[in-house]
Image 1 (cartoon, rainbow, N blue to C red):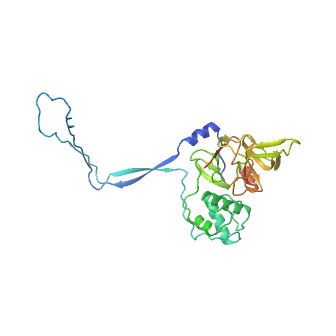
Image 2: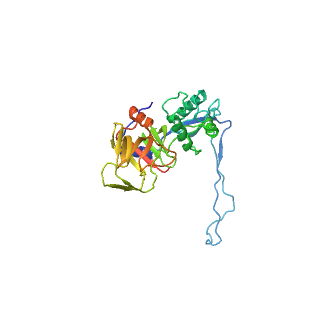
Image 3: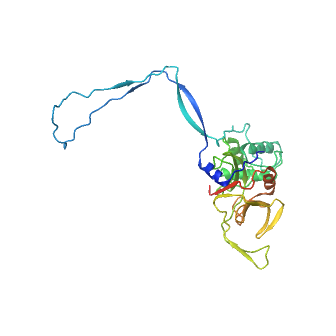
Length: 303
């Protein structure tokens, strides 16, 4: 698994604003000398122009011919640019099979394909467990399919046909990218989207609930995961923690009281009070790999 690269917020912000490209050249060979012909002309005289004085000639203007030749063996470079975050992958062969939620060899191949594309799950072992379902749901969200977490025929066909690794909007830097439009969380490393997770952000529905930590107090808000560029500034490594609005697992805070944290409920729609939920297993992996350290940028957008 890939370790995250940390950086200060300012450096990451600048990196995100700069396109990251790699240039290659495709050579072609000129078969004939190249002739470039230009003709100089005298502009017409306007009917309203004053009568010219002096000698008027009716001879046509001279023509100038410029001939540029190249040896027939000299290549003519055609520059192209390929963004570093575009990573081709071949279609699955043989095709992925719709297995529903069953276990077996066909499920193992589907899990291997999901990992090849960067959709995180805890193990490719042929068992259709929670993280397999979460990876399938993240794939369905990203490609606009029905988001039930079940590997049906339509999802299997799409999983077979993909020819590029999915990618976020960031094409430079190392950061966490949260796409609220797609409801997925991504880890971008050196401009490349390495991992994608099913996520659930703020519902944007106002709430008015009893504070679970302070008797007599009420918490109110709008359940919004704030857009913008933030950074991880606080975290709690120990397991479950009772927040004011409910229990959260191993949170990493990136703006105010909003955190990425583990949850036993990560549905296919925005459902939180403003935090970004991922599965408990995913949150354990995030902590174990160190891919989301203090000060790493967190970019939240609408997609």
